Amino acid sequence: MASEKPENIITVGHDRFGFDSRVEMDTLRSLYLSPSFVKDGDATKNISGAPPKDYGAQSTYDKSSNSIQFTTVAKFPPVKLLPNAERKRILVTGGAGFVGSHLVDRLMLLGHEVTVLDNFFTGSRTTVSHWVGHPNFEMVRHDVVNPFLIEVDQIYHLACPASPPHYQYNAVKTLKTSFLGTMNMLGLAKRTKARFLITSTSEVYGDPEEHPQREDYWGHVNCIGPRACYDEGKRVAETLTYGYMRQDGVDVRVARIFNTFGPRMNPYDGRVVSNFIIQALKGEDMTVYGDGNQTRSFQYVHDLVDGLILLMNGDETRPVNIGNQHEFTIIEFAEAVRDIVEKVQKEQGNPLAKRVNIIHKEMPTDDPQRRRPDTTRAKETLGWQPQFNVRQGVEDRFFSFLVYDPC
Ligand SMILES: NC(=O)c1ccc[n+]([C@@H]2O[C@H](COP(=O)([O-])OP(=O)(O)OC[C@H]3O[C@@H](n4cnc5c(N)ncnc54)[C@H](O)[C@@H]3O)[C@@H](O)[C@H]2O)c1
Image (cartoon, rainbow, N blue to C red):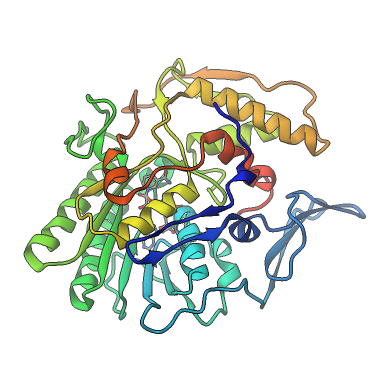
């Protein structure tokens, strides 16, 4: 893996399709790299490495009482001042989740009016608390399974639990969210003539027989397995989306997202990146399922947000894969995370007494063997390709305070 420093990436976003979505990485970092303090007796240490700042939220974890104190300051980062004709009213369902919160940051900084709709099943208010009170921002607790009425120009429909333990927790609810939730948001798009983008997934390809996966591959999904509520839910959500497009002329966009990681991931969501980072930070054995030769590709969340904004504002209505093409075996990935976490811990003066071990456990049912996107369509139609490799993403150090901070 190349190891160019993530600091060398100065901006994310593009000026394309009449929509300038460029934002400085330092501004984004100032939103998620909030100072996080740990109070241990009389000593208070800033464990995030992020400098104090005059806006946004910060937290202090008190070891003795096992409590966490949040401080929010009613001063916001500067956002673009857009003329009325350019300022869009944008609805983000699932905007309090991992991906949604980064999309919200970007859209807010770009000067739009953003409404977040979320039932907080897997998302948390803390992910977007730094915008609460801003005149361009609104947050509504609502379950997309029920209809919702609002006047908007664009809908990014993300609401759906995305990690296996979360979507399997209540399989019927996951299916309702995928079908009824998508139907309600498409109905809203039809009424308001808003452009509608759904975040579908590489899981629509199931355990693929073709490699890498192109958008015209129909997939290989077990419709009665434990993952089916999510995989088939997303498949039918795509079917609905194109049904509304053909029958009712709704202006749709479909993003098929591959594994993504980054700040504000739920550290205990059971996904492989979170598992590895948490285990390595705590000095526990890192668990690899099977022999570890199954492959995955991981993209950093800023690349995904770039892709979603480009897709929303471009003309491509067919499904578009958004993911990093670089393929790793899981064992290689575990070793890379272990190296980077060790390096960061050493630099912070908390080296672990001994190296963590990598152990193997039995492979879960229907876990795909290989997964890698063919992103030719994204490159050709959106001019999109990822800027960050995995090492740069992990080196962004977003995880350094994960053990304490729920956001
Ligand atoms: N993160 C990835 O690697 C990945 C990969 C493929 C697809 N996706 C898709 O991207 C979207 C966001 O994923 P994420 O990783 O941010 O997951 P997440 O679980 O962090 O976020 C999902 C958000 O949706 C909300 N939500 C769930 N059900 C809801 C309901 N019925 N009504 C209202 N809100 C509801 C949750 O509270 C949460 O805030 C999902 O649609 C997911 O399927 C993500």
